[in-house]
Length: 466
Ligand code: B12
Ligand code: SF4
Image (cartoon, rainbow, N blue to C red; front, side):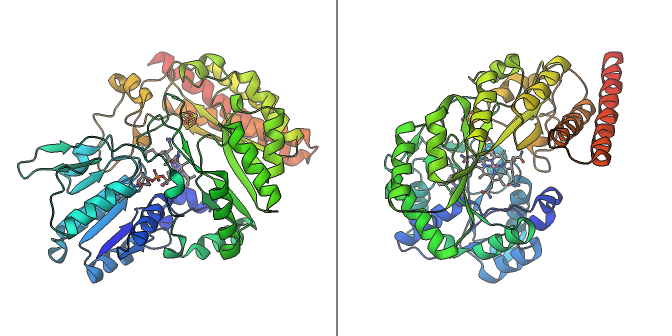
């Protein structure tokens, strides 16, 4: 028996428990649909609403011959525990462990030496199918493109890459019926009053931002036809009737021609389903924003990561900060909410750059923004740039994630925690003032901002003295 699973347990994720916007991992649902099409029996065990104990009991009961697990940099720690469990259980010694997803390409040795049998590198459907077929029929897997495995003597074999599938329309839609999608929708409804389902229309991204992980699809860009996407949206609407769709694509408006065709189809077929998406400011303009609006976009996330052009250029983000501000405002004018992503603590970033970032946020005034303290993901240009001055070699790989990798920055790490609080509270104060909201709440946020600013000053002094 084949079991497809992942390593994310919502109940253990304190941060997500405060957010409560869970999504199922689409990757294994794509694999499941492909397996079903090929009439290969399998189960999907969705760990999201389950627990480690229940999952282990399930494994002991089912004793799968193949355990196929999605792994990203955060779930890695849990997936390593799953591998350890399977390897230590006498009744599971026959189980072959296959791993795939965004975190396998740059962790091959670590994963294979810890007990994984095979890694599927890159796009998964075809490779997984060939591997499973070879294992089931006792044929040789040695020449299957896109896999990596360990020989009996410990040598690691990395087979040539598999070419990327040209026509994404040939793939069946993600096999959502294999999981309890209703629990996701109910969780959303309970905590936010609306529900959301993810859809993927493109694979890969042609850009090369230095901190961004492109371990699955590389620097590629392929897209499903607008008709196929509209068909999937209709099916989702009929089956689950969610309030919104989230397109998980890297740059939703990368092709204006595609968006125009998509919009016309949505209108012709009277498809009323709101969506949010992510894109780049340089792939937006007034007409594109109108297309987004007409096709149901209620929120667009426009990345820039920094308000300092110096930092944006260092990231190789290839965007002008003024265009980002203009496009955020243009989206808002068209009645679309705007969101943006901010990253603090990029190499060489100084307090002046951070001040520029706050100014950028105030100038653009998006409804939503998220802030992350920069961390280097293995395999990215950023990782290579900071490797020599990072703690990547000291931390325990199996028990830590790439988010725990720290590197020498302009100031100490605590400084950036204060800087995050400073920006969040300064913006909250600014937006409350803008909306004429109560003076007591506003004073509280201002006070928090001042406290965070003092913290920054203190930590800056500590850094200078160290
Ligand atoms: C949607 C999304 C999210 C959502 C939902 C996650 C979810 N449950 O789906 C949210 C917002 C919650 C999220 C959170 C995070 N995310 Co995210 N996310 C994405 C995004 C945009 C789309 C994922 C997706 O559905 N892709 C479409 C599917 C079809 O592709 P796929 O998953 O790669 O699957 C294919 C192959 O990988 C392979 N495959 C996948 N699984 C398996 C399993 C087996 C056994 C096999 C054989 C093959 C296989 O086959 C599939 C089909 O070809 C990707 C970027 C991207 N464009 O892929 C980032 C991405 C996966 N996220 C990333 C990161 C860093 C995060 C966070 C750590 C961010 C943070 N700062 O907190 C968290 C981690 C949360 C967690 N604990 O897991 C990175 C992962 C990098 C890495 N090396 O692991 C990515 C790649 C973004 C990036 N470019 O840097 N994310
Ligand atoms: S950050 Fe966005 S635009 Fe840049 S490489 Fe990653 S997915 Fe592409």
